[in-house]
Image (tube, rainbow, N blue to C red):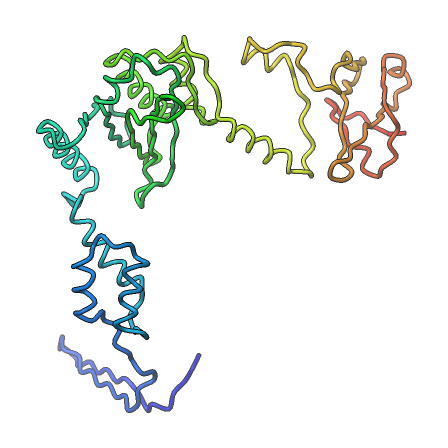
Length: 349
């Protein structure tokens, strides 16, 4: 902490039966010189006269007037943002402001000034706030021709943590915006609330514009997948290739975590359409089962890109005849790693 020879002190005196305090403060020397960082009037006028300029261009003009400004670029940006906010903010409550703005845009569209915008009224869910609107002009012109429907989302789009869902239709290789849904959760809503909002949103589009896609596309969000599959059961549902590839790369980049054994029975119980023969290559042989233990192949990652099979045997000689194992031996110190279902001891060759 920096100290100064300022000879400063504070004296406070209270008197009995008196609500008034006597305060005396002495400070003989300033610690640090205070600079004026207020934005000059000519700079404020420049920003107000050119609100459509980009921030970089506006700042370059300001530097010509003040080569070494005492104010910051951020302070100038706040003035510019306040001017821009007046164009669209209708109320201090952002949700009420958005609804008022949509009503104004709808009236302007009715007068022919803008493309038509329609507010979608979807069901309410506890703990959730939702706002939705569609573009009837796009839907009227293209709904019968759209065969691929995409739902994409962006989280934390503003300071209030709204999640934005965009519904796009494929038209000649391009994405055509059809409708938008904004959802915010306070964390107190019941399970599946967001999924129900998405279903209501999609059902409105399907019912009012008779859209019949043959393919629906989303990322790996479970609520989006469930909503699309229920509302458009006749369509084939695909996952975004980029998200799927990213999920695989993220999982494969974790080298210190051994993969779990793939239980085909559990997988088929949840997804009956899975082919029972579609199993990892190291599990193609029949399971190694004995009276006391159940042995599976386990892969041990010795170094990135290099793995060997383990040869594990139970100590009980009665189980030796029931085991069948193929693969090279491994004498690595970590070769005792194996998946087993009881407390039997293990050794490796």
